[in-house]
Image 1 (cartoon, rainbow, N blue to C red):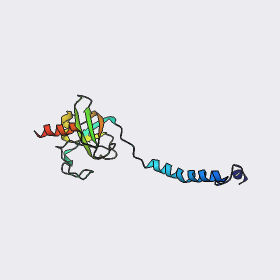
Image 2 (tube, helix red, strand yellow):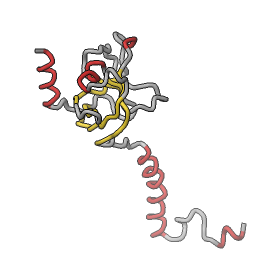
Image 3 (cartoon, helix red, strand yellow):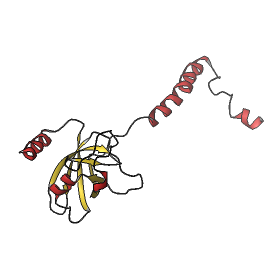
Image 4 (cartoon, rainbow, N blue to C red):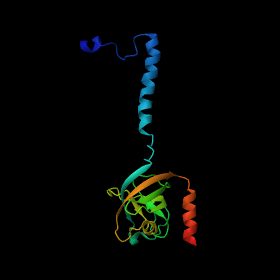
Length: 157
């Protein structure tokens, strides 16, 4: 007990008036600062590389994570590493074809793939015969890019 007292008074801010003010302030703010850091969401990495797959037909008509009804005809994707409603450009690294999709679903937590695309998106990337492909994903943000609107217009015609 005497060894503890030799190190200084407890609590540490009880030495002088000046130390009380700064010590109390630090004592009160330090836990808030440490707790506050844990609650900040990290921004998604702007460019990611990994493996892409596409949805099985059994998911047609089921609800997605965002409560939308899934259809293979829309340009959508599922990812465990990207936030919901994020627009991304997916590039097939084999043939360099690209497609812009919106993330509206999550995959199974144990799934190690980067993204799971709808059949329409996989067809545009040209890997429906293979099942899997290596891709590059560029995060475009939450707003629908003009390029995606052009793709949907050409798809409808």
